[in-house]
Image (cartoon, rainbow, N blue to C red; front, side):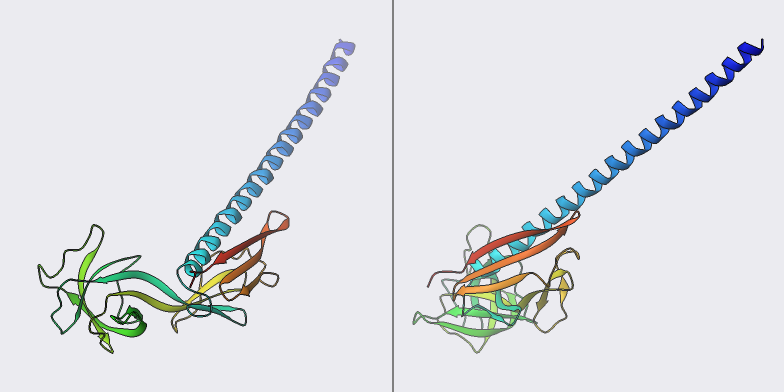
Length: 233
């Protein structure tokens, strides 16, 4: 009986030790999987935000011409952010410019201006003072366009088309890409995962914008580089 009891005690000790080892292994596996999952999530977020930055800057630069519609002021990219296009209707009433409009958003007289193509073939800038509805039958807009009456200041009689825009600026600061519409405050576009001290924005020639950014992904910095070309003259 004494030998049997001693054997049972030894079995219990071995079983308890093995159970502790199994629990430790399980916790280690869970911790590793959790770390891997967290890293994958961080990497995916960096990739998504890098794509967002690339898309934004490519769109803004690609819709204008370097040196005319966008330029660098220190570390700040200042630009005309084009938001839509307007084409003159076949009939006009003289009080306002009747046009078919389409864009990312509707014109906003509080902050938008228009780059107007005059009958002479020159581009001229006017403020959008007011917008309203056009009389029925004044225009037959193509699919995706809406008809509106725009009051321009100064007026542009005989205007053929226009691009409406807001003045804005982009810069990398405080770990994020930030945008400033007009004279409003700087608004973060991304989360704080960019090494803004190392990120550089340069203009290689008047119409080519180069961006080299560094992102905090996982345990190291990852570099992303893009080249954006503006409209050709």
